[in-house]
Image 1 (cartoon, one colour):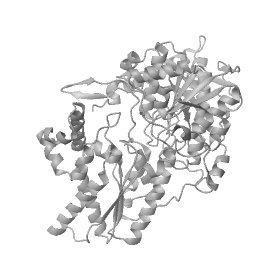
Image 2 (cartoon, one colour):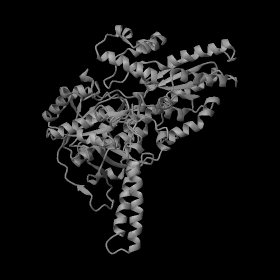
Image 3 (cartoon, one colour):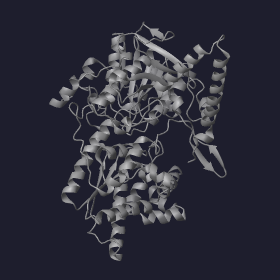
Length: 617
């Protein structure tokens, strides 16, 4: 009920203690002055799709990169904002709940009030549906008090996760104009921030004065690019799941007679599965990105697992733990093709009861091969973003059943001489997403809330709040903002000999980088994980002590300070300009020209679409 939103909630002793914790702010956000450095206009990383994106977003594409500076920063051309008029800001949860979301609102509230006590923060009740219906709650100290550092989205609630149709965009604009909002902050993942970008463009085109700001909050960890190192909630989800996985590992090792197949929430990308594997050391993890890259069929994957079971049996081990990302079903070529055909029939209005009879011959054969429970789940209507209802498709049970059948076949043939194969299946998803957020997620979310106010104070529209250098202590974090359009790509599908661009630009999910350091770390240890029982238990979520300051392994092993490197490059270029000036020696000029010609040629090649390997889908 709406009346339940924002009410003080009963807190346990631990929750009360967490509510007293106040995150620190980086130096660039401290004080009441906002110092802004505007960089160069930002282009899309998708070189081939840049003209499509710029055409679709003429008002918000090509805006400058923004850095917020500390008081002592020696940047002479920085803009210093000292006047902070009264503002009215709206905030909405758009997307599935992710630990730390409440702290974004808390940080935004504190920043707004610190710069002008008469400013107001208005929360929309029930997510985007509440935005359309203009159902609001003013965020006050009293409202936010029992939600500080707490999990869930129950302060405001959420419903549908989209602002996409013409009617929805118009309803959102009407709400912002009626309520006279200076800004609307949208908290969510890739889909929500794509909608935020479209809303910002529409507002600019319609001369609506409300600015739109996006915040990267999603447990999936798939909103990742050169400006966003990780998302709020990912650390918590992985820590909670890793403890559950580790407990199961210990149970497997104790009983020595079960194989546990554990499916993890995380949508199509396998970031959660990868991080949990690095933290808990299960025997196997099947990453969707590996499957897609190698074009592995369901039978290939079954054989891989069976071979591992057989290798372990030869070492007299009849137990193990296998992690599976929930998006695996969309990475297996034949299952993905089957899903696409089913979804196409849904779009044509074919009833669920009649879909199986209208499948193509090959799809019908595959469909009939699958167990009845999987058939029923594949027939579910797709999500609002046209993806399958991944949380409802029990891929872990399908694989466990196929592995058992194959092991029994090998046993009958005499190629497998071990004990009977026993499988137990789990799905870890909803258990973790309402957890108390980790210290890192509390800090990160609170800081992002403050960054949102800085974006508003700078008068920016269509930007995402960013914090980089996250693997360092908070006092070394770098805060800024990047145009959401610069994070967009255009999906391409192969149609015959040529590749055509289909669909609108969007902030697309980032897959696990199979050339990245986190994946390399997993591969270096995969053989020992598979054959040896080197299970690792990080313990329950910790706010102090040995595990209190830990951050995601996949964040810490990568070197992703993109914003810092951009600034470093700008400093080098300024230094070159100060050295190579009229009056410098011929030798200095020749050396500069030679070096610049070489660098320019190399960067031109690296920036071309062919070098970037624009993939088709």
